[in-house]
Amino acid sequence: MKTLIPQLALLLFLSMPAHADQAIDLEAKLKETTESSSSGGKLMEELVDLYWKDEKVFGIIRTTSKFSRAQTENPKRAAMTLKLVEGYTVTARHDDVIMTGRQFLEIFPGHTLTNRVREYIATAYENTGRGNLAAIEYQTIWENNGSTSQGIKALALFNQVNNGASFNRASSLAAAMVVKIPATSLLTGVGFQGMHAAERAEQWAEGLQIAKTLIRRNAPINELKKQDLWFRTGRFESKLGQFENAIQSYRQALKSKRADVHSNLIDAMISAKKPPSAIESEAKKYLAAFPKRDDRFTPLVKAANAAAEAKDLTRALT
Image (cartoon, rainbow, N blue to C red; front, side):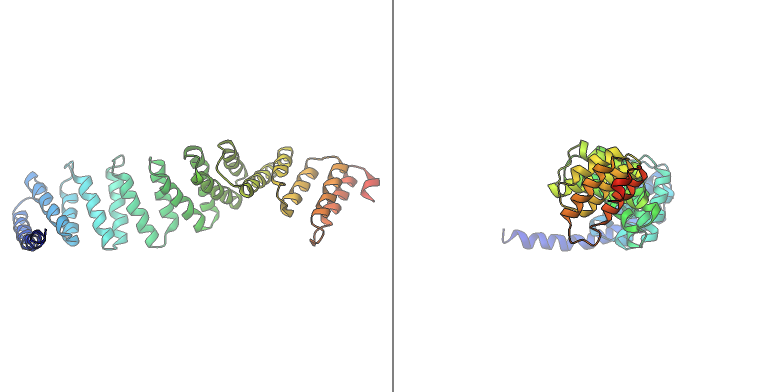
């Protein structure tokens, strides 16, 4: 072993000039050959292999660029164009990554390398502060049988963009993902991100769809998160006018002592036109549960107003 390592090092050292001489020879032959010809294609393939082994990035970019332009009917054109995109990525030529990647997608729309090219485009968009465009690429990768992680990247970026259109996209993506991804902690994370986006985009039906899918698929969540899930479900149902359902959801969430849950439950009961006595009873429970809150009497005021609307003047005035 002691004698083998120096021999290998010497062999590697001697091979580097040989590769360089070989590349020079191939470049010279290429100049004398029509780039679009079969022999020109083979010469460029050999050159790219050499530059790839020696990590000569600019040689890779130069040769693959020629190949992609000249060898329009060559079956290896897609793979060579991908190498060109990779070369641009290594040299941080982000706009060239995007432009060449877009050309690839136009020329080879259904190619097996499409997702890899889209990932480079997405990374270039991220590196140039265009998160929304990056998210669209990651979403397309996931929709094109990409990994769950690509969908999660898209979801996170859409939420980070933080505007109405991006929240709409995040909500729709999450609604699609929660049906398909395995029922692991990833499902829980995607679902809650999607519900957040649905709330921000005021997509109540889509948010409810996500919530119900998490419940139906028994997403792995702890007790506190489960109560939060029921609370969000109740809010979506309330926004959609499904007050009877909302009451049941809020009661599921009320296992934790949360003022916002209790307050929303009372509001849903009022909207559902529940008997004034039931509303008043729930308002008194709120007062007993949160005696030091500034809004502790607010539910009782709401209960009195509900009684007045129901013509129960005795209860309204007491």
